[in-house]
Image 1: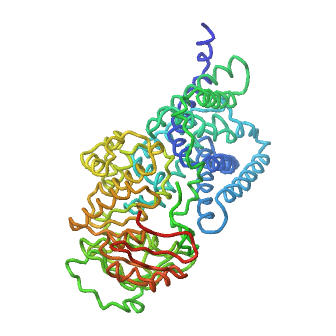
Image 2 (image 1 turned 45 degrees about the vertical axis):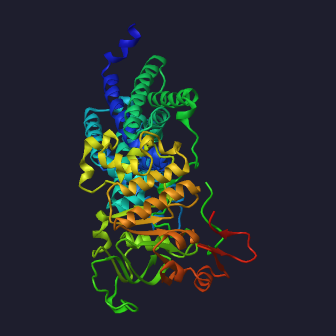
Image 3 (image 1 turned 90 degrees about the vertical axis):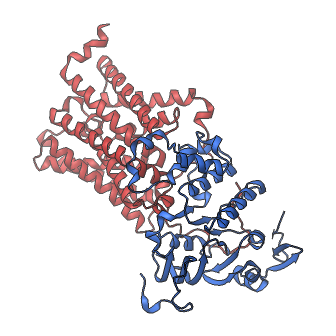
Length: 307
Length: 280
């Protein structure tokens, strides 16, 4: 049974495992809201654009902590910028996301290419590098994960209320705009936690796959979060083993296990739980809170919607 | 933003009569695209059951949103129980249109109803939060709407009628004094609608004020204490029999509407169109 214990004799594997635990927890907790609100594309954009911030911090001579800070700043700028642009204009949400995604990701790659002389490996940013997880990185990841979990628990009622029914939430005194911005910041923080281990390209997988898998099996948000953490941990551990023994890249291994979990559960989950969505996928984020565009045609004959 | 110079035009400064639950005075408001309702004035007393009618796009939902304090008054004034709408929220129950609600959201009926108890400060009640919202108030509201046995069901698995009852239970749970209901019975079968109307009548009899957006003109005629007909502007307000007339409805709906009465029943229909709002 040496193959079970062998990997953990190496310090870099221990670090990677601890980093993976943080990624699983942060990814599932925030990912639950990403999944129920249909924010996967935004999450992906936020993760990719964090590269620009990380690169700026690196070029400025910053260490691990500063690189994470830079990544976080860029991620938050994307998250808030996207919402601002789509709210204040006729630009559709997914268009705004793509603009920020493309622009800041290109900037990130450009900056990193400039810094190549300094031995900064573009690959390690794009697809992660478990050898590159330093002690400082672990401290930053752990602290951010703790902040994410604490904020999510503390504001759980507001986050769920706004996710489910923003209009009613506003009518009940919830500051909907603030909560939505807060959720985006949480997504950005989770992306920063995850990008060191799995790279900016695959962060979205750790946000979406574990929570989506859990959502096929359990039906309440706290359960989805806990289930997502379990799936994420399975993916991290199995992915690390696979990577170690098969000598393949770590990040894709972890992500493939997570996606495989989803596939297996999707095929095996009881039909009733998997349940067809009665109303199709909804881009809830773009749902206008004011609803001003509804009901324009003055038409006596168009009564209530048939259900 | 409220501008005093443009303020009350029709109604004189409404005396703060103890029976006035909702006072709307020269209200104009809307969205970025422009005003959606203009110069609306009416007073709903405690115990009133007001049918808010008008064609689609006439501003019914906008008016309700203004009464909730979600839209600021551009001109004019809104008072709910003597207070500004933002300050009256604890005493106001709101039921959004069912089609605005995400029915695929992973949440149980009981958790939805418990949301009605949300207060910014009580949001910190972590234990109840993760226990799924069990509380005597929640049980009582679900009992009253006939949804008690659905408590742990996922909302997506409920029928349209059950979903609507759950939304109504969420509105009832905090025992508000003013109910703002946006098309609560649209698209429901008669049995659910009848249950709801009975409940509305009980609430009104208990001194609650209800403002109900609806397309069911005949029902307003027969069951409501007053009717408020708008199409961007106020067209008529008063007892249903004085509001639901051919003149008013024709103006409201922009085409000729025939109104006739057989016995106690009132019918409104369009000539040449195979569509009638009538009793079943």
